[in-house]
Image (cartoon, helix red, strand yellow):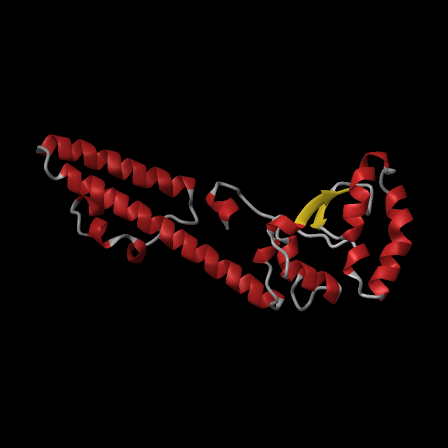
Length: 196
């Protein structure tokens, strides 16, 4: 959600779904992600020959000093295949490629459906919070204008409405789309009916 607040149009949620009940990831991988934090991840080429982020383990630690000389993908991936198979069969996280995103601590052990519902709920709360902040800022600006002469109030109000309508076009999913979502303070303003 932080990425969206910072202006991203979308985010990739691979690690979030990796720990879901429906995921095909091994339990040892899921547990490693669920118990990790940001300091436990590392960028490595050790397993595949391609740079990827994963949970730091014994293999990545030992191979780190040799990464510059490792063969590229798919050669390195083929060379480590047997190590990963044996480690997987023994549920040994020290020699598995435990891929993870930057923020593994945000991963949860949920069903995919529950995760999607939680993400949507959190996104809606963020949108509501952002609109409350904007609404409060507009109220403050309108109150500041009330002490000025009528011409200044008119100019200030027009500027406020222009800002309001430009936000509607910038973020159509967040815009006030019907009368029930227009803030009470704006409904009470006589100019609101003129501006609709």
